[in-house]
Image 1 (cartoon, rainbow, N blue to C red):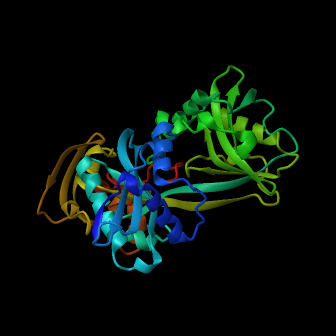
Image 2 (cartoon, rainbow, N blue to C red):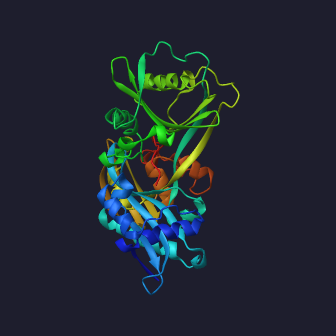
Length: 405
């Protein structure tokens, strides 16, 4: 088996392998050269601009493609900083070649390059969490999906402002301003760049029936941003961001405008966005909340993650990490932190206060899990979860992710 990045002449075949693997009809009839020409001529968005970021496994002839994964670079927020991440998608193997280790080999090659280039995290949306745990991924962000009634009366009449539909490239800067105000406090939110807004500049709501609005207050400040489609009698929001409470209320007032054909609006929010007091009716038919996992996360470089992370107060501990794929992560780390930042990280042979798989370490350092839950599951001793030094390292942090890949 040969594993490498695809070549430009293999672009269409990589797409075909994905569709054949999942039995999705491939509607794109362009030749490989036509696909490449269109992407290079008028790239639109991150995926088209980074279309060669795919690893594939081949038979020994180096021509028969049997498996492929995509690993697209994204900058993300982590503990108040912007760091490199690669989002995994399109993981596929032709049915006749499954259970031969092709995906494992692609992951090993992709993760190796991530480490060499300085990428700190990888993220993916799994079909099976147990399957991707073997590659070192731990449970990632969670979100609260909420169905809110579209009331017969204006929810917040005191909130003044206007909503603006994005079309013909208008209001994109305002949308971006709202997104950045919302996203920057959450670990794993993409720090979107100019290329990430190219598609918004080309939206055709009259054709796509997919609508993007910015809500501005009566002083003209952008406060809310939403993208949605209507399904049955529900406004299903793909994105729902707000800079403050005024922005949230403004977006609900916008939803009120669609009450003639919608009963509820469905939004997905971080766990710490406490909107309960803002919603006047929780007993209407179909109104509910559901907590949901949204993907899995993996640390690529344990030492670097410890250097970048923010801590609570001051302390020190020895932490052992086991990583069967990126074996250089395996070891014991003596961490000393002062006033919220690392001042010393060194390899050591001392006995660890805590031993973790790289998946559990990833979950803890990002802040999507806690020591208490690992202790409850019997994966660490109960007394370990009570260590003040460890609780200053691993604690629940604001987290969310809104990009798919």
